[in-house]
Length: 259
Image (tube, rainbow, N blue to C red; front, side):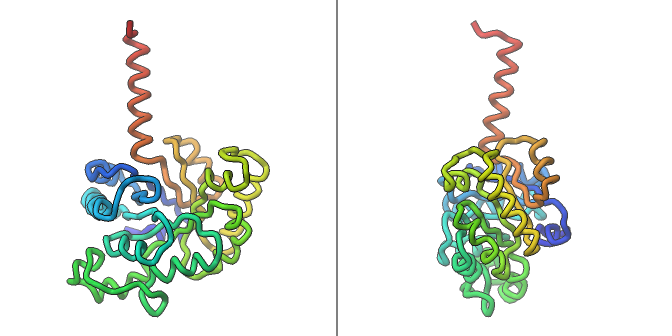
């Protein structure tokens, strides 16, 4: 089955989702449904490294073709390599605002000579059983996505995307709008202009444009695809669970009035 990197390079849509709970059962179940990727969010959740590795195992158990990704809490060498060693197929790095930060990310992701990722026995290489094979293909196969979520990043977008090795951009709409001073005003002309600038840069540099559709809104996913987005995150576990419960209870209360 084609990897998410190859699908994006061929212009195909890649649709995944987000994991904020630490539940391996939820991770395995969502993988079973057929998502292209599932991203463990360690930036805005309480999930730690050990829990993340368990979630990666659950994702692979549910569907060996579902790519386990991690949305990092930051952009540090030590953190990045540990999540890759735990079995991440790729990383999504927040607040990449300039080319130096992008290069720092790539140095942590890539083995020498392209980078400085350390080599050691870990889950990613079968605990040492497949070390040479793993290292030989990791630089080509590891997926790298940068989050563009500040106006500084928009101003530096061409320099950021000129750094070799970036596969996709994920727009962070809430933080980006906040940096402009128009939090969550996604239709504001300044926000629209910023997003258009990012999209145009992605096209120039051959990098997939990505976005997170937070609410489980299929119509918005389709609209974003038609706008040119190819790397799309469809909602997240806790939000889909909450919406299902709220909608179900609302319908129950509509048909069975509570006195």
